[in-house]
Image (tube, rainbow, N blue to C red; front, side, top):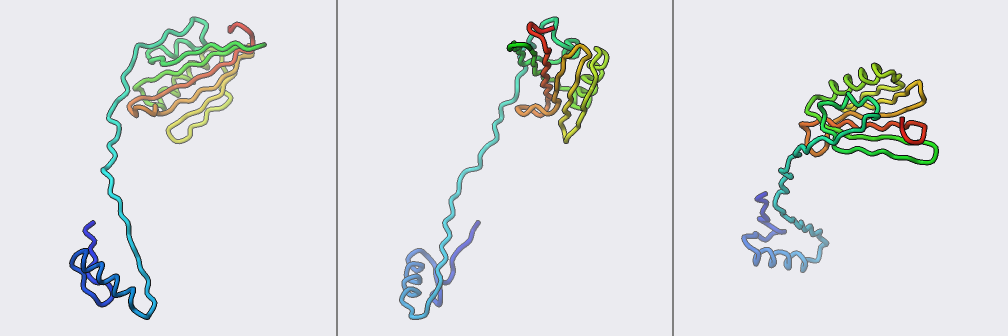
Length: 168
C-alpha cells in the first residue's frame, strides 16, 4: 500500500505524464532494458456470513430406533429409514451444545448398555468415529464432531444396518 514510482532509468517521475515520458526514454535507449509492470486489483474485504444456526424442534425417532434414549436431550435434525432387498437400516443426525468428548462418551455408554460391542472408537482431532455391532446381527457407525454451520454445536451422525427387512 502506498507504493509509488519515483524514478525510471535516469528520469524522475512525479505523475503519470512524467512516467510515460520516462518509459518512452527507456524504450529509445540502445541498450536493452527490462520493464516490470505491476497490476494491482483491490477488492473490498469479504464479510463473513453473520447468520447463526437456529434450532428447530427435534424430530421424533421411532420407538425401534437403536439406542433411542441416547438422543433424548439432543435436537434430531434428520432421520431416515431405508429398506432394500434383504436388509434395512436407520440413520439420524442430531446436534447439541454439549462438547464432542462428552457426547462421544455418552454414545459409547448407551451403546454398551444396550448390548452393542464397540469395534472401533477412533478420535481424530475434534471428531470421533465409532463402529459397533450387536449380537443380533445389527451393525452401525457414528461420527461425533463439530457442526459446520455453528461451532457452538456438536453434531452426531449415526447409521445402523439391521440386516433384516423391516427394521428390528
